[in-house]
Length: 327
Image (tube, rainbow, N blue to C red; front, top):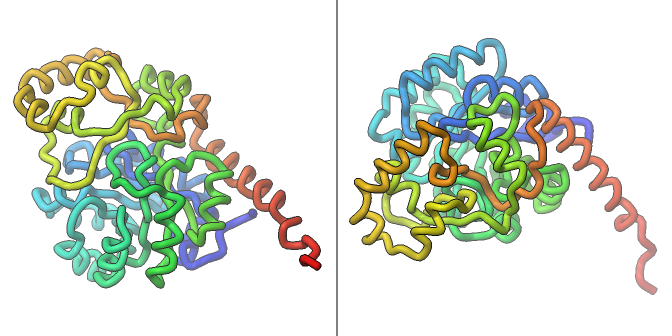
């Protein structure tokens, strides 16, 4: 694999089919720039619409192609941010977790690429109908919020259902995952956990170190940290995947009603833990591919290694195509 040669490449002008997921509070301008400079495509995590933070991070991206990702239901509360990121030069807008219809027209009118992240087949069809140029099929193995379907089954189903380029996400953190995604029919991958511990990531150094020692066996998924951070996620099949810690163990199995009854207590606990970087209580948001992140290293090296490993993986499969037919 030397470079991307697909509709994805034409739309995003990336050399390699490796996209940085828009991680709220983690994926800032330095990280997005590093991924784009390395030949991939970096999305800044617009997340819940922290306007001062977003303004500062976008200043770091002058002269490189980049995108911004938003949590769609949160963008509805601050719709002016869409114009802000367009004015800052974002080439692509990624929307996830909510109805993209209120924003699709504005993205098209601005001449930007509309990327819709979906978790189900029906969402993929709806996104294509609303004019999404690229669809990210996100499996539940990924870090952060996701649905319930697995990446391996969801991606080819979405590829078969839509005509626009599909990008795979969820549990992909090295070149073997990239090669597998391409085999499933995706034109690229969107990775978060793979870049969480990158040198340019805004994650706390202690959180990065914890990730490099973690296993996908020790992730957990639920709404604990949404309640504890005071985030009003709408009802749905969403859960936040993080590494397990003392707080998740204490509240394991707690119902939504019980968590919300203790919301004030949990929010005070998390606020203090985040100030002191106490990750026994504060979340480290990572997916089941945590086992594949063993070092804190530059984002450019992560992209390079992913592409080279994918190339070797594809070459190893070449004999399958040359095998003698059954007699």
